[in-house]
Every structure is written in C-alpha cells, then in structure tokens.
Amino acid sequence: MPRELSEKEKAAFEANPAFEKAAERESKQLLKKPDSTELLDLYSLYKVGCDEDVTEYQKGDKAPGMFDLKGKAKLRAWEAVIKEGLTPEQAQERYIAKVEELKEKYGFDPNKEPEVVGSS
Image (cartoon, rainbow, N blue to C red; front, side, top):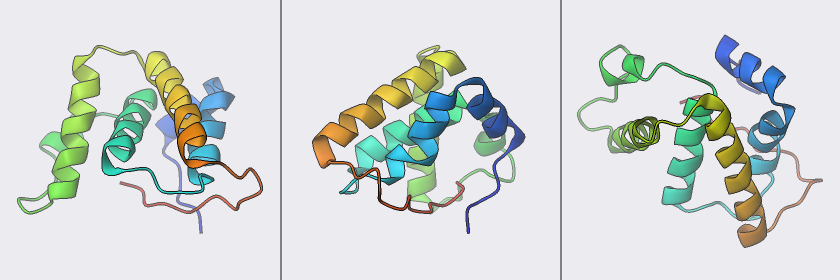
C-alpha cells in the first residue's frame, strides 16, 4: 500500500509533474538499487525539493535517536543540500537529473511495478 503524501509533497508534485514522475515512478523502476551515497543524494534533494522543514528532524519528535546512524546520515545529507542554498525548484531539477543518471548507470524498466518505499 502506498504511503500517504504530505501536503508539501502534493504541492511540489502538482507544480512539477516531471519531479513527481522521477520520484514516484522512475526512481523505483531501476533494475538495481543505487548505493548508499546515491540514495542519500536522492533523499536530500527530495526533502529540499518538497520544501520540507528540517527543524522537525533536527530537534523535534522526528529527530534521529542516538543509535539511528541511518537517520543521522540522512539528516546530514539534507542539511548539506540546504547549505548549498538550493531552492525547492533547483533541488527538483537536480533530483530529476540524478534519476536520469541512475537510469543510465543501473538500467531502467518502465514496465516494472514501482517499489514501495518507507516514508522517512
């Protein structure tokens, strides 16, 4: 069952259908899973592209716990993209370009059922 999109995700997808296509379908139709660094790139660009609020994940209830190394890596990657000063629109375009790069690197099957991924 697909996860429920946030209002910010819905707004970003409505404003940029190519971003929605890359995020909701094409990134999940690769023939091989990208490596950890590539996944962090996608995650951080997605979060900035959807104009998500990083402060909830820095100090709020969604902050990674002391032993949540994966969550901390995701947060650091997100903060690095924010430091670059990208607008949500620029992050969306970089996300789309990254998915295109990964399609070339790992192969792509447009007929593959998109894989369901977690919400964090």
